[in-house]
Length: 279
Ligand code: GLU
Image (cartoon, rainbow, N blue to C red; front, side, top):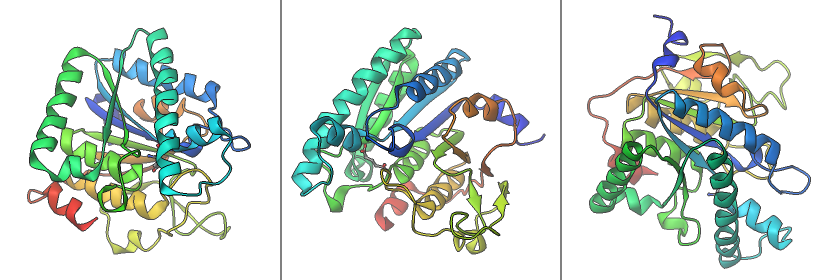
């Protein structure tokens, strides 16, 4: 069957939204119109009987904007901004989700949550119970306690790790770019768009530049390809799609050709903890 047409049947979907897709560029404050569309799209997928996880960035951006901070001056200031912004973000999510009859739940994690067997097991149980209860988990890195050695650092990787943990069958990375190009399209007008990646070999990995062009996010194309490696080996398809218009979510699930699709390439010997240790 055409892989795009098969996306309708996905049962467990993780959708990752970066900060730059949630805030107004000029002010760093939340783009409420976009958020409303996102929440409606996610609610509708949930109403179709799918388990949905939202991995949402934005805590630090929202906290900075709320406190009128232009540029972060220390780790503790960043962590304080995350503490302020995370709760503001969740208040808005909970309000919008409740308008569509949904219940949002917050899960904050660090790399340690995943490398320690006991907390990994607890996290998985919590996800499963939330699905059972019909809630929509919203995940972010626990930025208030994460320091360099225990952080994922970006939510691209975090979302792929969540996919592997809960055995999701699709990861959608909503980004500020249409998908994967042969080169950086902002700098090279001849860069060509790649609609499908069957197997993620070095040829594709070399196309990723370690830059994002975004003032707000942390993940560039390189982290997206690392996420693709984890998600596809764990047995999920992955799509990178443009977050300009969140209506793209139902169009993608409806089988339309947007974004770059990375085909699942399940590896029997895939072991999540090995990957985490390499990060
Ligand atoms: N966890 C960070 C935040 O919520 C963002 C990380 C990312 O954008 O990849 O602000």
